[in-house]
Length: 231
Length: 229
Picture (cartoon, rainbow over the protein chains, first blue to last red):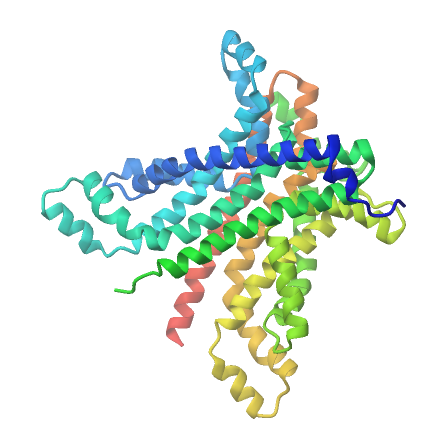
């Protein structure tokens, strides 16, 4: 077996592959987060809506998404969903970056389902009287949510949301299944063209763990800076 | 839709068995169950190290837990795929690779569940048992663990749900579990990916949803019994 030699992956062409994979992973995570977060808030609010039909929609969404592995979501959105579209749109999509789009759709739906549960438990931690008081003062359901409940629930909600972001970061690796050239995909490419799996995987692991540690530190900083106020 | 199920239903459920290797849904369930059963002792060991009074045990294991929890499972699978043959000196099949990766990965997550279960018990349990003359390990085995186990049952069932979902990553190393079999069926049918992957999603949903409902029921039942005591 070859000796451990990091220089192969620390400079030159293979280094560039890994870096481009790393950047794409970060991009996937950030784009997915930016779309998933608002979606999660909408679903969380729907789950607490005063109408049973809206609550049922939100519950169905959350349970249907959470009980199916992300891999199956990816396969469906990549292989299955485009087939449902009319031919001109389909061929247009296939000409463009369909892998990344499918990956982002799957990641957004999956992450939003988990995040909405965290947001919901945050919203529930605010005493009912806050909602009642807001409504009594003449605010509607949505304005009370936006102006009274949501801002107060942030301290409870943000730490679990950060740990969901960590999960999202790790989940981006699954996008390699449908051929998105993110970090995991590039690591395998480097491995198969240089036969230096150990070096390639070591660098990739450092990449994943490094970002994960930053996210974890962010969470503990937040919890220290904005501790949950006990009533 | 019905003719797909008629033609490929058995292949979907058990793979090519008995004319070839076992696969499909049965493989997924066997893999998930074996992974969880084998990961449990690993989890207990790691949890005991994490709450151990000895720094020599505590620090390395805490480090390992942090690193593994910051790593995607896929990375662990690739490491297993790559390292196992080097370490053992013989080729490891996909099942062995996936099982090893899942045992290590789940062991770490189980360790956190077990640790929380142990730390959730009142300190008095340990102290009174120690003052009755039991050693640390005997107290763990006879007093702490049985109580902690009961409290963490719902989390264990939820972990089983996660493990079932995690086995789907076997797809990447061509392990013939249910996702891989579904993709093979889809490739043979060519024109019906929507139906095939919808069935795949539905299969996971039925398994995982019923199990997580079971965990929820268990949690409520245990809470009622604790309240009575």
